[in-house]
Image 1 (cartoon, rainbow, N blue to C red):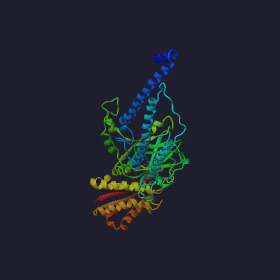
Image 2 (cartoon, rainbow, N blue to C red; image 1 turned 45 degrees about the vertical axis):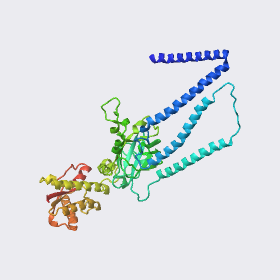
Image 3 (cartoon, rainbow, N blue to C red; image 1 turned 90 degrees about the vertical axis):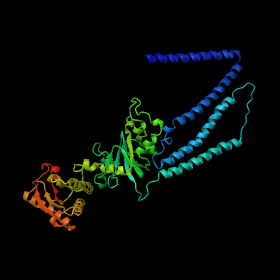
Image 4 (cartoon, rainbow, N blue to C red; image 1 turned 180 degrees about the vertical axis):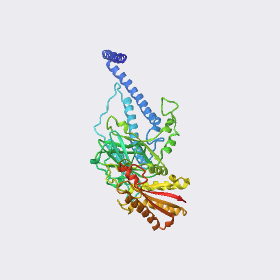
Length: 501
């Protein structure tokens, strides 16, 4: 109700002002209309001149006041290699248009004052002036030519694709309402293929083709983590409507179009911490990050690069924001190694896995790295406990129902071989284990043969047979239930027990 009264009062005030102005106009027309026109013109001319001074002064003041908050100025200089060329192009455009802007407005407001109505003044009319025509044709043409050439040079530099055999990191960003899926290529450095017909929300969000082994080590991340100084190629696409991949601090902006993959290439040159230290020098970023909490962290401390969607893609558009973190190459390698493959974590051995029950190269590589760490820990601890000295090798693979080693087992066996080389006094017991399927005696014989096969690989590389004892235990020492396929798979294993080193 209060708001209604305020609105009605304002409307009444406007009506009163209008009526007073109308009465004043009628009074002037009845007395001396020419004098009134001259006085009004004089007042308007001076007001325009004053407004012009205030307007241009405000423009200059606001530009200086907000400079440190605008991209390209103060601390917000580009955080990417190519961004400096883009900022230079914008600065050149601003220089030319700014000069014209200031000159035009000075003339506009000055002319409004200088040529205001004055009694007795005559107007000079002229039909044509070739010099003026030449001036306002040639000058804009020259300026536009300079800007276009600068823009083309910058465009060709920024949009150039990676060269053959050039080192780069490729990341895929897929937008949908309302999120970004950020996919990394894993250890092989290659992103696997996708097929939109394979998309299953909640199961296979991207439609990755699991028969393509390049997909097996790909992983997804909740934030975009990038190494400083390394060229990054972002593969950009969308699953539903038009989105836009926008990294303002890196001068990266590209539409994400359903069915039409695009890309952008850039090289980060400042880590997040380095950028924060730049912000720290400016008073604008020494303020609390939460205005409602004076004790909150300062703005420079809470700063993060960000990925935003620069298209109005729906009412949940705001939620597509993602944090972008730039770290040193060493930190990135540690982070990259700690990420888990989506396929191996969520799809492997499920009904959606086309390689269910089969050994995989990517899986063997990951398990080999884990085996190396387990061996190092076992040697480092020096524990006499049998459990601490016994390693379960679920990455030594055999042909089905046979003691013939699968070639993929070489990754694990090479690590075992290196352990014998590094520890000349190492002696071990290798035991084979099976699940409970089939005849128990046959399983014991098979497990013994498999243990011997591992020993033969090592002795074939020059390791003395006296350092390796073998044993076949068949299904007698299960580590899981044999009622499920997963349990039986875990029970089929080789164990490597350290006797001394």
